[in-house]
Amino acid sequence: MPIEEGKAAPAFTLQDAAGNKVALKDLRGRNVIVYFYPRDNTPGCTKEACGFRDLWQDIQKQDAVVLGVSPDSATSHQKFATQYHLPFTLLCDPDKKVMEKYGAWGEKMMYGKKTVGVIRSTVWIGPNGKVKKHWKRVAKAADHPAKVLEALRAG
Image (cartoon, rainbow, N blue to C red; front, side, top):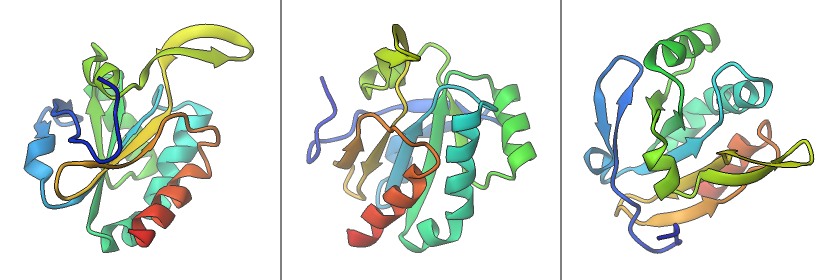
């Protein structure tokens, strides 16, 4: 079932970098930004994460929480978050089940070749648990966090 704006976001529970379980249902009543990225410590992923970090206070003013999701391990997430002082939660999806539910795992073009992997994308889930916006393929990782904040501000 593809992600559709106006429809309920698929439920999920994933482990964070500290080993705690984070469930979407526990964040009900808040705006939730779930961004899917390929890998910790790669150039595009670092720019995107640092963009969310740099806009963190403004994002919080919109009563929003940011969750970064990749297939990386908790150890990798801990190092990445510490190195770049990331104030938001990174979640581990090693079997890519949540990514599949959210359309963030599949065929994509990379350097002119078709490959299967993480599709850089973001889903904004409103306080009611419904998808408000879905950025299906994020082309410019560095510019994306500002677009998310702009959408949050516009409501």
